[in-house]
Image 1 (cartoon, rainbow, N blue to C red):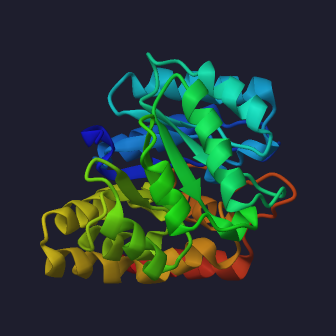
Image 2 (tube, helix red, strand yellow):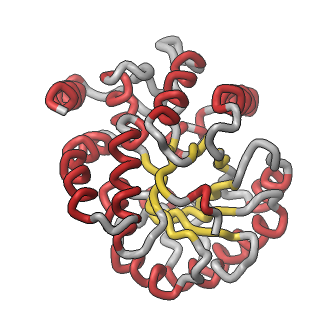
Amino acid sequence: MSNSLIGTGAALVTPFLESGAIDFDGLTNLVEHCIEGKMEYLVVLGTTGESVTLSKAEKKEVISHIIKVNDKRLPLILGVGGNNTAAIAEEASKVSVEDFTAILSVVPMYNKPSQEGIFQHYSAIAKAASLPVLIYNVPGRTGVNMTAETTLRLAKIDNIIGVKEATGDITQVLKILKDAPKDFLVISGDDMLALPLVTAGGQGVITVVGQAYPAEFSEMIRLGLQSKNKEAYDIHYRLVAITEYAFDEGNPVGIKAILADRDVCNATVRLPLEEATSELKSKISAFNSAF
């Protein structure tokens, strides 16, 4: 098990200026905010980072900037996902082992592969990858669920070190936790279920809302890992409302509005996403005023 990936990782947004260009000052602020909040690691160019709307050149710029600002202070995970297995395997083979600890690769979207197709997809990526692989199950986005049985089958492959599980199905999570190898990371991809997953035996979370409240969220997970459940759930319940707001109008629409209200970066998103409504922004502002 990679101990550096136990705890709380931030699924970083990609800040934009109102013009739509990348906001590198905002990205600097965000990285520093997460580091100062004592998060354990950062995830670059995942779904929350709007990676599907970035050009190849922009992705390189975002990667380079985060590497520079982070300056090896926290481990970095790079999102390398898609629905063309051969292309993703090739990309995974070229990720810098000097700059990144692992890659995070989502179940192929749109194709809707069978369970055997998912297994063979990840087998090919794991074989080609220059770094350890975290598999990522988020059927709400991909259109297909990677079952607990498939996850456990993949857990036997040496270069696959864990799963980011975002089904929202606690029964599926418990099946994985029950039979996973002891060195296999089971990481929540659902902020609301992050603490229940940890207290059931999981190793942490890759969080969306936590990047806006890094000190509180990462402390909650650390307390959960230490079986200090009352203290952990005290924090959890403080964050329930804002976690709901973060996803009310989709991700990263909500989290960018939250980050803007906390003066970290702008709320701007790229089409086909639309910026948060004034109603949601008002709820977020009221929460932060009372937080």
